[in-house]
Amino acid sequence: MSRATPSHFRSHVEDHFTLYDLDVVCRKKKIAYNLYWADDEMPFARLRPTGQDDEVEIFWWDDDHWSQVGEFGLTMPLDEALEYITDDPQGLFFEDEDEDDEHWNEEDWDEDDWDEEGDEADADEKLAAALESTEFREGLKKAAYQLTVCTTVAGGLGGLCVGTPWGLAVGAAAGPLLFAAWNLDTSVLRLWFLGSLLFGAVVAISAATAGSLGACLTEALGGGGWARVLGLALGALTGWLTVLARPLAWLVAFSSGLAFGLWLTETWGITHHTKSCIIAALLAACFAKVMNVVWAYSWKPMGKHLRRGEARQNARTVRASQDSE
Figure 1 (cartoon, rainbow, N blue to C red):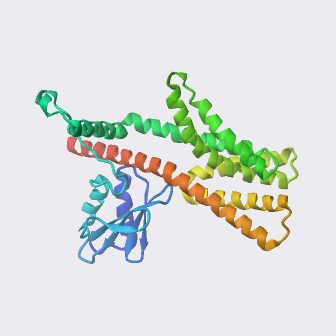
Figure 2 (tube, rainbow, N blue to C red; figure 1 turned 135 degrees about the vertical axis):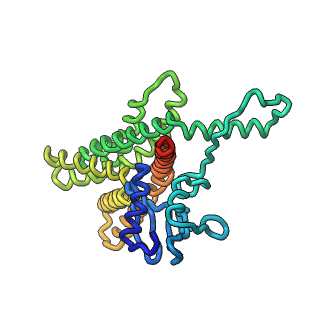
């Protein structure tokens, strides 16, 4: 497909990923085409036409800027480039994990060859296989669903309160408790406690920001019955938004920080507008930064791992179907 128009180029790229059941958006940016995940608008690849037939240079997103593939870059025809991104042999576009389809043959194993390095390599292979397994991905999907539900419900509960700090406190407390109760398993108490602690922190931060906004609305409307209903609705909605997309989560946290900062200045009796604005802006920035960190170390890696696993599974399915035909 040489000298294709931008619209045809975008359609061709998106159709390729649709074949693998991946929701990808392609957008033209100056002289290149950026590829984004449709669910959270996170970039993962860039294709820059070279002007020679349909050849493109491939770039990958390293969470800060676009980088070349390899030391001298990588250029190939468009269809081959799309296959390269889908296969992801270097783990640049999804996650840096090794995939090894070779298995240990017990008959070829010499007991004298066993050493500490072999032990570590075997452990790494087992860990990589476990992370690539269907059971792990299903467990990750279940955890993501539970986190979403608990954050939404806890945000709504926080919204029932009257006053920003009460909504913040109730949301932060209700989220982890709901998640821990949902996954209560006394047979593996230590593992349950560790999982509740880690995932509970994610829920607590997200639900706290959502609950504070709902409680702020409840207080502004007088704290009556309808006010609490609207506060609950706003808390639940913003709680859901915090897990939907990173920019929305940042916006919710920033707004929560502003609301909490204004309540704080009012409580302290600060009437100077400049001081009030500075305090509110600082708290808003802190809240937004914390939410950004939560996303970077929870939702983002979970989403990347799930997409990578699904991409590989779909690629195997499509190739198996093509081979059978």
